[in-house]
Image (cartoon, rainbow, N blue to C red; front, side):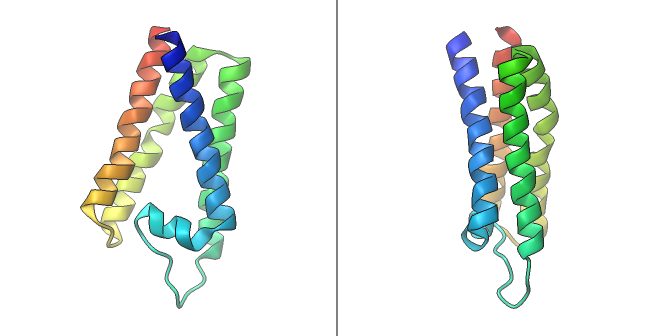
Length: 123
């Protein structure tokens, strides 16, 4: 179980770094993948960059905690960070995204993050 717990934590942290990169360097496609496309007539670049910075920073903090503090600190971090995809679920629903994306991507991500936290607590 230890290998599974650590692997899931690292994969989730790396995925956050990937999302951060994508929102910073490919904001249009990243926004569409998020479930709420950027408005073509407006400049949402700053907001998409903020999301990219946030996601990248969360991934980096997770990796640092896991590497230098340990599994328990990473687990608590993951519990706290699970609110991000929960709010993303609400944002997608409030701004015209589909229920499939809201629950199939964002809510499912929150559940997976909480499962990862539970596995780390069990290590």
